[in-house]
Each structure stands twice: as structure tokens, then as C-alpha cells.
Length: 620
Image (cartoon, rainbow, N blue to C red; front, side, top):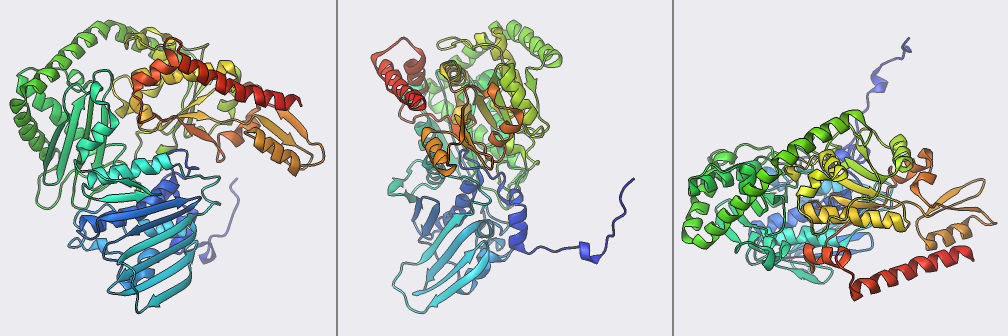
């Protein structure tokens, strides 16, 4: 029987703005994370501050932004108009306060809800804002959203603009660390979308003259592009596209009002539809949509009046209208692509011919694979019903309205013991487990046919839901969880090869990770410390004197489910798999999986020496 409890006025509590943000940070910035993922909270904090500086540039105020990240401290300085001095405190500490409610001042801004800098303020142990305008300056300092100091200077020689400094709260973002690669990627997107803007990050300058054309050409090598990049622009819309010679699936970069909509939305769906329709009309052929879009690499950016996103972190556009008297998003994009792309193809017959050859090649390959794919789909369907290769979770990446969708993770494990431990200790809402059977095939140099013929690859592809397009990806994070021994390292390499060969955009878009698990457990009767490196082991031994018990984990199967909870929960450590911008996918695959080369031999010997040194130190 339910316990009888009193429900009175005393049970009702009102939280002030900062308390609510700190108690429910996910509502404001999505997932928290430790900085190993590009969509972790610490990068959202940086973005929220930067968005204000970008809006100043868009309004014609200030052509440069300086950003510095040293340790955990972030400093963002713009040279815009500066916050009105009498409102410096209110703008960063009072909800629903900001200049963007006045659409005359910020017509097509991302940050329309007046929350951004307030969330940064509330989630930082140190936050300082300083505004300079008209020869005067005002500043305010906060700790976890609480005002501790403010100043007003009547006379200053500082350049006009706004400077924000903050340190994310370690009690909320546990064990976090900024990765410069993710910050640089964010900043590059800002300059692609704002040609003429210069952003300096820790001394390195980012600048773009050609917008989305530069984005595509920075993301692909000239020798892999089937034809020169098509670059189309008009008021409120910009498109760049080409086709890859080697990539199998579609790759899209989409933006709304400067926001990178990593999960697409109405604008991306409209573009994909418009591209297919325009190509069909141009050639007078009813080509299959998948053949038209196969291997496409493209980017689209639009500007919308007061956009509506499907989540606070603005990763998916929900708006159906452009606003400002314009037609729907779908009609606007369709009309633009139909007119401008059709004109381009008539003026550039070589490009049109290259696109048609690509479509016909895709059509031949699809028909050759159709029988195999049908059998493979049936096999995958039957396997998911009758065995335990995939232990699925309840929330999926496509559930954009669920505020935990960014946490969705698939662990790819080797062997039953490891998958069993993770399965028993996982969060069933957001964490799924896929169990490998033996070592995967080395698929370097093989065609897509092998993905359907090889049972493990076919089932993994089905589990991820990427048979047709990564648009339907079921999990935001794909985590390779193998032992840290020679066999485990080999399995990692074979899986990375699979993704590089057939789904490189999963790596480019930051979905693939390696799970770090502890090498040692150091404990005494009072405390247990898990160590991920030799240095951590030495520090733990010193801390737990005298003579603590030391255990070396030889495999994931040795770690009990109760212990695994520590390693895949709040304290999870992930190493992102990143592509070197200086090397093509083909060059990477050739180096690691092609015929032996002196360079690779030296790489293996150098890294083997590190492992041998570690083993020797354990014996001593």
C-alpha cells in the first residue's frame, strides 16, 4: 500500500534561474561529458559565448574575434558594439533578457531565447564579463552565477567590444579537458559561414574567402572530387556540392543562422529532395534517389527568421517556414536548387556528364547488390530476433526531442565475457551492446558487396541502421571496447578499417571512439583507485601507502559488472578516432592495412617499445 505523505505548501519550492540551470543542466546544454565528444557541454558553453560575438559581426560590428583556451580557462574577446553598460549584469544573469528579442536588431540570430550566457555563467566556477563602448567600461564577476564584484570605469582607452572569461565547473563537467581539434572545427565552421571574419585561436588564425566552397575543399582532397565544387549563393541560402570518387555513402554539412545542425532537419530534407528532383528533370530520367545521391558531399546554409529547433542545443531544425514573408523552407530551397543548379549544369556540361556517369555506375552497383542485400536484410532481421548479438537501448539518436539522445552509445565488444559485463552494468536507456564473434575481416580494398556477404559486417551495419544513409544512425556514439592486448588492438584496427573503408563520414563527424579501461586497480582496505596509465599507478601507490594490493587487468572479461559501472558511467573515458586533415582516407588505409612498408614497420617498433617498457616496469 502506498505510504500516506502530507502534501502541503511546504512541498512547493521555486528555484531561481541559476539553481534551475545547475540542477537540470541537460535542459540547457544537452549532455555534459568530459570533452571527448564534440557535442559535450564544455564546447556548448564556448559556442554560446561565441554566438553573441558572431551576431555582432553579422550586424556589421567588428571583423575579428580572439579566443584563448589555456587549461580550463576560456577567454572570448570580440570588437563589436559592446553590451550596453547599464545592462552588463542583467544580460548574463537575468533570464529572458537580451537584445535578440528585438528582431530589428537581430533578425536572423540563433540565440533567441536569452539563455546562452546565463547557462555559461551558472555552470562556471568563475565567470567575468567586460564591456567597452563610448570610451567607458563596465565589468562583472560571478561564481556559479552569484555576483561577487562589479565595476564601472568612466574613462578607458580599451577598444570597444565584449570580453567574456569563464572556467567550467568541475563538479558538473567531471574530469573534463578541452580538445583543441574540436574547438578548431567549430571555429572553422564559423568562418566558412561568415566570409571575411577572422577568428584567432591560441595564436592560430582562421579565415575563409569562399564560404561553403572552402568547407568542402578542406574536407576532401582535389583528387577525390569527381568534378570541381559547385558553389551556389543567393539571399538567405548558400549551397556547395560535389561527388566523391571513392566514398560510398552521402555526406552532408548543414547550418541554420550559423548553427551547425548536425542532425539536419527540415532544410536538409528539403535539399536532398530538391537535388534529386533537379537532376531527374535535367536529364529527363526517373533515376532512383539513392543512385542520384550516392557519394555526394555537400553543404547547405540557410537563414531563417526566428528559427524553431527540436532541442535546446539546436542540432535539428524544426521550422517549416522561412519567415519574413518568404515561402516554406521546402518551397524556398526547392525553387533555389531548381533554378541555380539547373543553370549551372547547362553552363558546365562536363560536370553534368560526370554526374550522370556516377549515377549510372551507382545504378549498376545497386542492381548487382540487390539480391545480396535482400538476403542480408532477412538474415539481419532473423539474427536480431533469435540471438543476442545486439542488446539494444530504449532511446535512439534520431529521437531529437529526447534530451538524452546525444548520450546514445553502442559498445562493440569482443567475446561473451566482455559483452556480458558491459550488458549487466550499462544504462539500458541509452547504452546498447553489440558482441563480435571472432576477429572481423580485413576489408581494405574490398567493395561494399563484402558488407552484405560478411555476417559480422552485415549485422553491425544493421545494428547501426546505416544500410541506406548515416542520416538514420541509431547511436550518436560508436565505442570500440576491446582488450588492451595485441589481439584487442588488432580488432580495433580492423573495425576502424571497416568504418574508414565504407563509412568514413561517421569518423569525420565524430561518432567513433575507443573505450579506455583501467590497466591497474590499486587498493587498500579504505580506498580503491583505478589507473589508466603507469603514471597513475605510481601516483596511486604513493597515495595508498603502505603496500597496497595491485591488480593488472589483462582483459575486459576480468572486470566485474559492478566495477564496469565506474568505467561506462559518469566517469567514462573515451578516445575519439580522428582523421588527420593532411592524409586522405585512402592514404590512412594504405598505411595501416596495405602491404608492409618501412614506415609502418618503424611505427610498430616504436609503439611496441612503449608497451615493452610498461611490461618491464610491471615486473620490477
